Length: 179
Image (cartoon, rainbow, N blue to C red; front, top):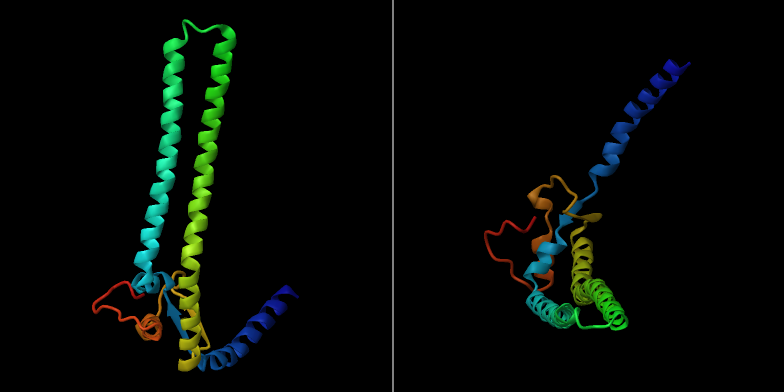
């Protein structure tokens, strides 16, 4: 019985293959690399500049906190012999709190960086997405895939140049990043 069912499944698949191939042969599928397209947009330099500035600002704040911690730690170590047990305990608690504050700041800074990057990139990616949709409609593409997971695609199906043209951006000649 299992053998008969297996033969039936294979038979159905063989019969359906030509139908499936015929149905998909009329589909026009392209691919694009939004990251590569982003790299050609004029606003990308501004986004990078703002991210660098924001990163430096956070690094400066972190460095100030580290210096404060280090100064208090050095003072504590230098005065340890003359401090009473109660004062030592208070200073140790203060140092532990400062260390916890440093760790918390690092985590918050990382989150803030990611949020800032998303905030800055979102309008550019929305612009790219809109251009991709317009290119698809104007050129009869049934779908345009992101080229990152595409293992192979015919260069004729790469729509990066069409998208850049739609965005009013000239792509330099002889670029290998337009995949």
